[in-house]
Length: 313
Picture 1: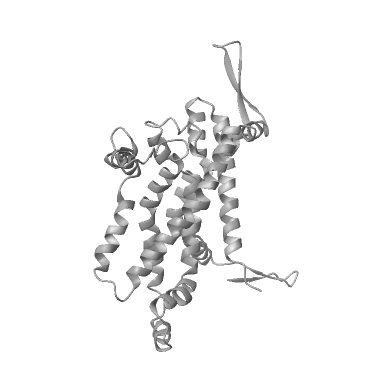
Picture 2 (picture 1 turned 180 degrees about the vertical axis):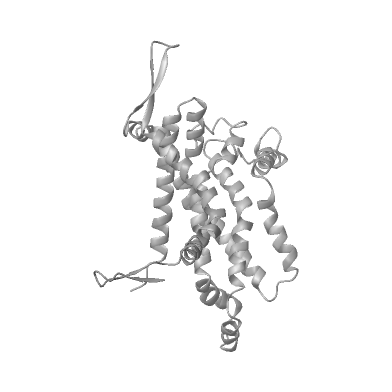
């Protein structure tokens, strides 16, 4: 609808209210589709992370003695300085880095090998073996850790008892072996999960490329290493990122073994250290540990992605 103003010679256009309402609904429609994701993401991710960051910058002071009043005051980076000067916390991060440098490549190599075997044309009963390899991941983490704890405990384990009868001095829960005993549990649990991701990627390899390789005389091993593995490289990178994140978040396995081994302390992993600080009602320090752990996870994951996506000159 157009209205002419004779005195000035200008034209003023008034839009139809119904058309404006329809356009507004179209603009808001994408938000409606995104709402099922955005609302939980904001409530259960952004808000908790923001609150942890806020809490890490404050501390609680008590006035009037033991039974006096408490108040929360701004502390800046004081909590972060305390955490970074805590040798037990920094030691737990270094321990997990050493753990990941060995455990992650071993686990992913096993997962890749199993996936390639399942994808092989000569393999029979693929569905059965796929389920068998995946079953450990389907077992709850606490149950799996308890099962392995029974096999590790020298007082209960038939395996350790047999090895000791054969003359081998084995203590899977000792100070020098407990970290790798935990690594064995993690590898046993998550190899099948990573194997499924890699196996799914192998199903997308074009059949004509494989046929061409066979026509050129390439054997199964050469086809796997020179054709399949380079094509599924994004899946390998994805499983690597997942493994890095999981390593720094390690909690269940050491927490279970802590009940039967004095070698696992309350600060053995970063998550255990944060849990112990929270159990002592030191929430500001716990928040600082959590923020630093999140930052370390982000930096390591981003660094790994940057390194693996570099183009060869």
